[in-house]
Length: 194
Image (cartoon, rainbow, N blue to C red):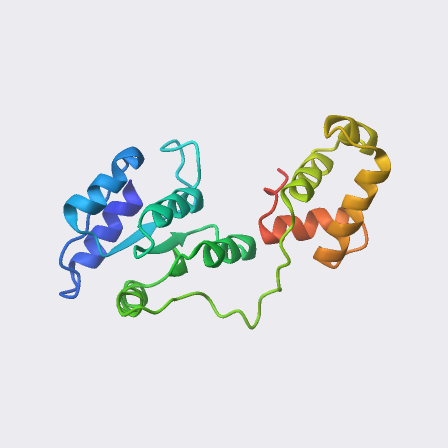
């Protein structure tokens, strides 16, 4: 809530912004968009206790019901897997919360003119999507479970589990479980181990 208030104060200084609304009512967001004739939505990935889902899933649902909607993810979770997913579902932009107010305004104007704004991809690792099963395997392996336990939990043979791990290694460009876990954390597939 504090970030939203700070954002409101920062954007209020610009004549290009007619109105800035913020809400914590995720269930009422579609009605708010319609009632207030919202042009662009800024949404975070992490919605804390506001929703059982993350901002990307909510954005995806909003875009399914209104494909012309312009959504920008404004987040501290600036990880390649999230940027990739945002592009995949049709989000217009992906910005880090550390952005300056002037750069944010420029991005909003850019998106309002029908463009997209994503960080430069030149220095970023290419992503080959992991399947939902591969993500699950990674999460279970990273939790410290033995391969046999993971295979049993996923109702598969250890050989099938090894095949999944090999595909994960190939997609992430690694050669061990430790390297896979490290790369998966960097990409945002699994949360950092504390």
